[in-house]
Image: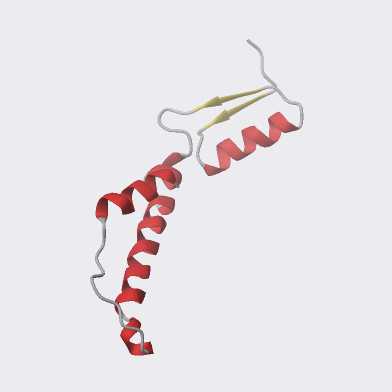
Length: 88
C-alpha cells in the first residue's frame, strides 16, 4: 500500500499529527509498538494526574475543619480511584 504520510510513534504528538493529516485529506499510516497514546496517556502524566487529583481532594476534605466544616468518615476508595483513572 502507498501512503502520503507515515507517522512513527502514537504518543501525543504522533497520533495528533496522524489525525490532523487525515482530516486534511492525506492517507496516513501510523506505527506504534505498544499502546496508542504513548507513555503519557497510558502510564505517565495523565494517569498520575488523575490519582493526584483524588488525593488532593481527599486532603482538602480532611482539612475542611480549618474552615468550620465538620466532616466524618472520610476515606479513600482505592478501587474507585483507579477505576476513575482508567476511565479517563
